[in-house]
Length: 563
Ligand code: ARG
Image (cartoon, rainbow, N blue to C red):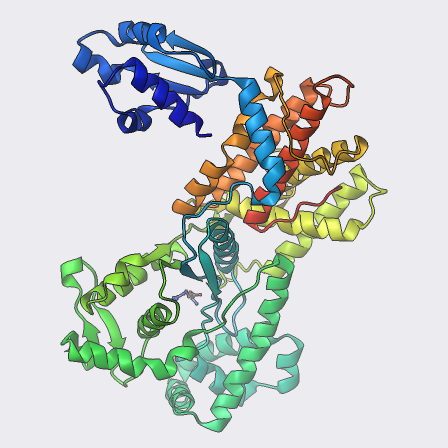
């Protein structure tokens, strides 16, 4: 049943035709506090037509509205406040959650259509940054949300595995490299070569020419260059995989920039055919003045293609391969201009589907107020962050629950989950500060707190031997349970909002809210007392466990049964 619809219907009948139901639906609000009811109608919407003060209209409406199906309907100032009938509502919602289980909240927004998501996309031979972590976990959560709403997400890791830097890397390796050194610690070693190259080419500019030659060779398929490139790529990818394993994130495709090497001629030819390419100081550009953007640089003077050229090829390839409903790019907001250019060029090329491309930007992570960057030497290594989080989680488990079985596994789920949850609970565009102690706390608005609430619900169910409680008609009149019930009933809307706004924080905030409401309920009600509502209370507890677990799953976080 749609309760908001029910409210709108009752109002529509009372105003007989002055407003239609759709207009009323648009005006209905959800009051900020529970004592003001579950829905509210602002009577001033009618004051122009009725030429009366809204307070008066509210009073008159209350007299006319049928209270059928409501606990009560009250006028408070200019508002008409509706209180839903708790018995009907609790029966309906608890039955739905128990019957559907993890599928509760599923809905068909996508009609099965494809949505490629460009996410994570780290650069080969460089450490994965906190920005790549954000892209990985935000992208993964959006993919889960899309799947829940019947889209077909396709997670693409657009690896940064091509570009002139590989010429430099090969040249540096030829001068100073050793196979053993690279194998021992691939990323840091390769990064070291790269940094050293940049130090030495200041004095020896001819190094740049050598590097350019290597990149040219690489582009022309020279066997030695290709072999080294492939080796650097494999070593880096293997290392990245260990991080993805820890995070529990998988990909459907690892087609990175190099994959588009043989697909760029087509793009350049198309641009030429459409008369969009212009020469500027020997380079080929597309003018984007009418979009108020800088020109897009498609080909350098020496004929080398660029990041955006590869992205153009990738966009076209994805459209062809997936016939997408939307094509998403989860990439930091420092690349906003790049994606504006990408869309603008595609538009200029006459592709209407350019409108279905969405850049999903996100903010920076700072530490102690300072930007975290790999360049300034302020390196935070992701694997260190995750390992530290797991140790902290283990420490807390040792204190709180020393006899817990599988402590290491749970600590892993809590530590890693804490880092993911912390990242996702912040609105993605906000910058935020990273303080590990804060992130892994078991109290406060953290992942462990939500996991802990879920584990508490599971422990109640174990005690009552009610883990398999079936769907049925459970009537819960306890007003202590109302906030929790309302939140459970709101889950589908929350999922919808999160997916429409590409905003996992909506789910994270909801999970915190539900966990808090449930803990308040738990503190004020004796759940296990034997009376006629015991089964209904257990049904509520089980429903909370289901929805908390599903919320965490959407975010990519495990929900251990005990912790
Ligand atoms: N490798 C890039 C970087 O680390 C991100 C790539 C994002 N995806 C894309 N299709 N441009 O900055």
